[in-house]
Length: 152
Image 1 (cartoon, rainbow, N blue to C red):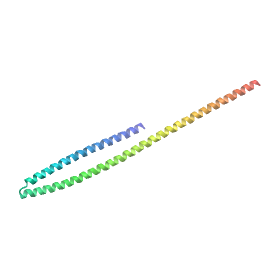
Image 2 (cartoon, rainbow, N blue to C red):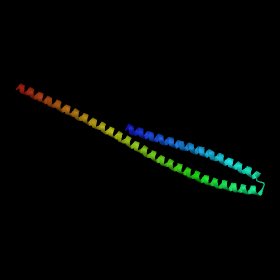
Image 3 (spheres, one colour):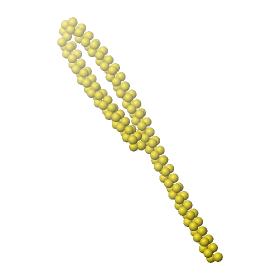
Image 4 (cartoon, helix red, strand yellow):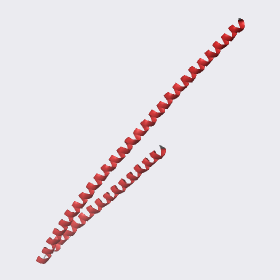
């Protein structure tokens, strides 16, 4: 029982550790994404100011379109990653819930077994006490019969 509880505790700690690492990774990615968006925005703004010639304007528009497409793709990847993280977190929660229910069931079985053992012990003690009373009564009867026989 202690080994099972220890194993379950270690599994839960490992899951929590992985989730924490994943959450930290996600926060770092989010920070990098925001910084990248800001940098991309500033760079695009600078390019607009510098684009005086037709060729420069064309390059700027193409670059902006490329950045827009890259941003859309990045957003799509981020959303997919977030969905995956949510799904994994839900699965982890469900597994932890199953483990918790299993532990509760095992504890209930242990309690019931202990209660049964205690009840059986009380019954055994009661039977022993009754047997002792019967033996003492039998010995008393035998002693009385012996006294009667000797008196006759």
